Amino acid sequence: MFDDVLETKSLLSGPVKVVASSGITSIILSKIFNSLSTLSSDIELHVKPVSEVSEQLLNENDISIQTLQPTRANLITRKLGEVHCGVYASKDYLNKKGTPTSFADLGNHYLVGDIQTGGLKDKFVNLFGPEIANQIFHLRCDDHSVAWRMVVEGCGIGITHISNGDSEPRVSRILKELPPITYPVWLVTHEEIKDTPRIRFVFDLIAEQFKKV
Image (cartoon, rainbow, N blue to C red; front, top):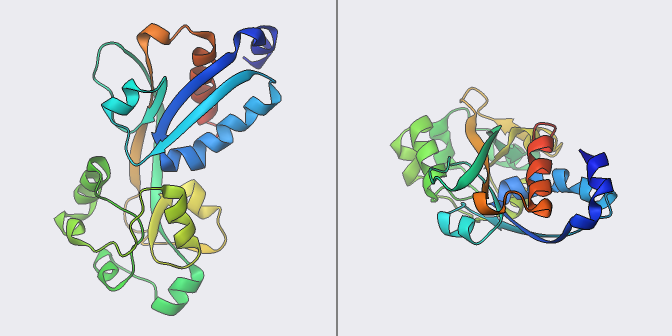
């Protein structure tokens, strides 16, 4: 793929707008897009991290990465795989507050994040029951990278991709007996621009590299 790109890099110039959740942006796209710096292309990436990708945001961008399967007919979609999330807290926090051993124990702890977006809230309710909707999130933040930093620094208990959480030595995964929170990940672009070289290149790059990260 990349050899072909080097031969046609003169076509790879101009803006490409990508929208994705803040978690996917900070954890996954940062690893995928690091290869662009080796290609000397003139692509100008505009990356928009959001709490949840909506149809309007998709209309405003060239490519979206989302957890809900699109249903519109004029879109090109590809299922990339799945993301698995777990519950984490810093070791310092757990030493001070204790380690919850059941979902019910979370009521005695500080929770970091936000589950008010539709897809995430529904996923929690399906896994853990309707009482999750009544849990108090003491520190709300729609930006996953900021919320995760709060967890690492000991502000409370939060959720992240298992690959991300397990690689951070300052935190521990808790409630491992609970099923992981699993999301399908869809790559989407508009049918009318799928053959634009710079957009097609970024689309294919994400699809090719996702399984490696």
